[in-house]
Amino acid sequence: MPQLPLTVWLAVVGSALLLLGCCAATAHAVLRASARRRVARWPAASLLGLAGAAVLPWLVVWLAPIRIALSIHGLGPLLGWALLALLAFALLVLLPLATILCAVVWGIAHGRRGRTSHQPTDER
Image 1: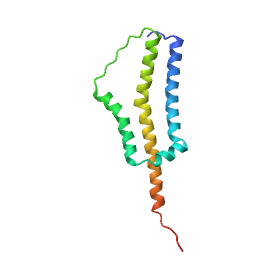
Image 2: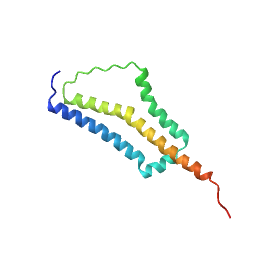
Image 3: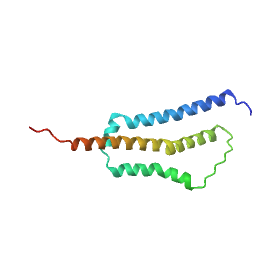
Image 4: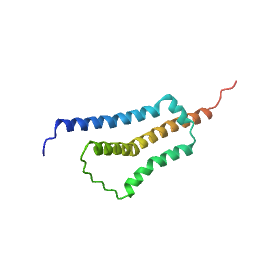
């Protein structure tokens, strides 16, 4: 197995850190207090719509016979394909991550609402 140059390893590590940073930024955006308050007020239909939007790209991946073969010569095509890969990552990973976090926030908020509205009052 041939050794890869240091620049390739640095590019791989940089890309992995970029993707992990995107996941952390998505989680931070959804879990901020202002976002949690907004998500808690969503009707269930909005959450189901978001879930449908998150599942749709995975259905395309699962059902469509997609085969991609690349021969990249130059910096322009490389950057274009890298941006396209980043878009695919956003659709296939970040959107479902945001959907799951929104569902957890929404479920916790509605669970608390249900508990507080059904608790007996101590009137004397």
